Length: 119
View 1 (cartoon, rainbow, N blue to C red):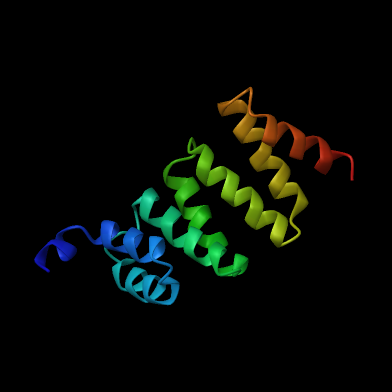
View 2 (view 1 turned 180 degrees about the vertical axis):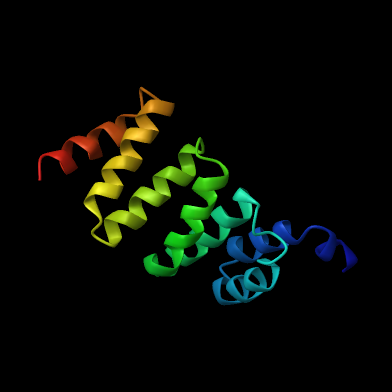
């Protein structure tokens, strides 16, 4: 049992894998002060909120993850989806452009960008 507390992010990921989202949120909230400057932790927390369809709560975690590591395409992809869920078109466009800058051949981001710019 001691191992869980040495690897709290691993335990958080296990809760998510097991579909224990409420427990993961509670556990993550308790870890947050200690991991507030950890982009991976912020990404995990944002992902949990996104999974439970709470884009409003997910967004600050993705924003913080972005501040700590702006080159994470997976995070930018989810951040794009959160902006779309919140109907924030300009922010979603910005995320798509950042993804394409990091991965010029990312067809998903290119396609979405085309759709958004032509709405």
